[in-house]
Amino acid sequence: MSEGCLLDPVVEEITQIIQQLARVRRIVEVRPRDNLLAQGVVDSLAIVKLTLFLEERFPIRISDEDIVPENFRDIESLSRFVQSKLR
Image (cartoon, rainbow, N blue to C red; front, side, top):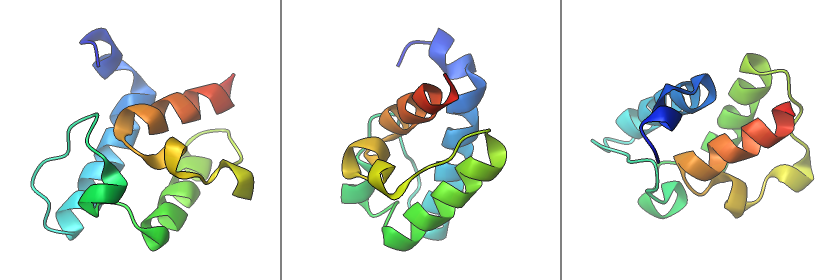
């Protein structure tokens, strides 16, 4: 992820919530391209919580069809997904 992208408010919000989820699971560091599913940062319950958070924080609706591993794989893909919903 480029330095300028780190200043994006969507990326910042998503990074913060992912870091909170990681801390609960005693995961020390999560980088933008780390696989959240493989690392155990995000599981089915966390995806539900994350979906609710995103819908509350941003003016978007996430359908069941949107909840696929490709959209929740890492911070970068999640940020791209939310940004696409904002357009």
